[in-house]
Image (spheres, chains in turn green, cyan, orange):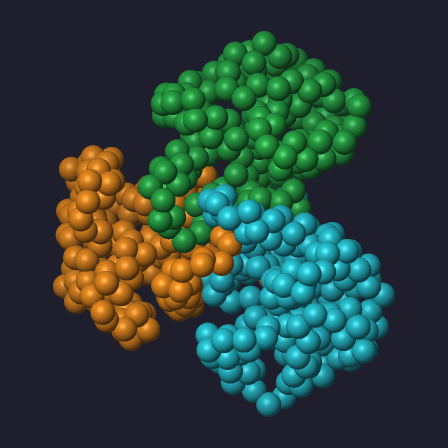
Length: 180
Length: 180
Length: 180
């Protein structure tokens, strides 16, 4: 069994193995496991993604679905000996924007609450800023919000990992041996 | 001379120095060198890219062009003492989709065949999942297929490198000293 | 105080903490600090970004604005004991293209001049090649130009860092301990 960091942040692109890595972190900890799904099964593509994730995780995961009220849901479920995997912050941020809430306010509230949670939490989040500048102003705003949230959470996290092709690069935490 | 891994995977973005790094791996091995080009000279832009690559490599490379039948071509040419550089899997996957083949089946077939090849192979592949979510459903499907293929090959590869600005980050292999 | 490398290159995506990391490098050096802004306040979005950057840096920075004549401006201001932060090469390259200049020529001129500068320089530049291939030919050309410039500068730089979520991965320089 490996001890789980208080706050972990798993970054990466689409299909980079983020969720799978987060599931393994939780599994190796021996904790009770909660999967906090922020995605909404709004279309066939999402329904199929959600079903595939659920099947892979197996029956020893408790699933909680909450697209928007992330702070309250974390405060309700986080506890010593329980690992909560939030999958993912990119869908949550999308829901925040669709609901007309202020992403800066919601992000700050999440970051502030994270430090006080009663048990370990693993956040999965997308890195979306490494392509060409989007022509669409909303897309540009979204990647700014996402980048800021990732920076703020990375600053309070104990473990930060960047995934590529299913393999982790550790940016912060006990195994990091590159100082830059 | 540096010994070449059995299966190498060079990941990175556009113009990150992937091909050049792969060519150097092959060159330092002292092996006979085969360049397996998957790109098709379909338009002026591709013709110009292919010519520039060919000029840089020089005359000591044997060039084999195969846009689609990658497994068969690898099985024909891989041999002890020969380094085969596949440039690149992103163009191959594009050709698979254009031809109406199933990318999951073709990817699985490639990954399965890779383990049994008679000589070392170096795959070059693009990381395409680190930008904003594409509005185009085909583009979203493509980055899912590419991400899955990269993960599957990384799992069987002996060496995995992520390139940025011509510089390598080693994700897997003998020189990796970050455990995450 | 930490000694500043002769030529530093800070790479990363949008909102990855590049400017902030560059500012810290300059600040820790104890040098006189010059912020060389290449962005033009052409629209409200840029005006707001520029103001936010300026406010964060504080009053101990001298600001020089130059969208295009980067080599001449560097040669004028670089000096021993002065740290010049160029923010950023992506906006400069955009300006080069908008002005109808040849990006290859301008990039080569910049790289050649960089080696001969009289004091330390820190370049901030975007990695834009890690998303799906853009449909727009101009966008494809831009990411090729940007990728080539990043490679050329990385080759002459003493320190190269890739940022994600405000955290650095060192690709080149004294602290690099991954050899690949």
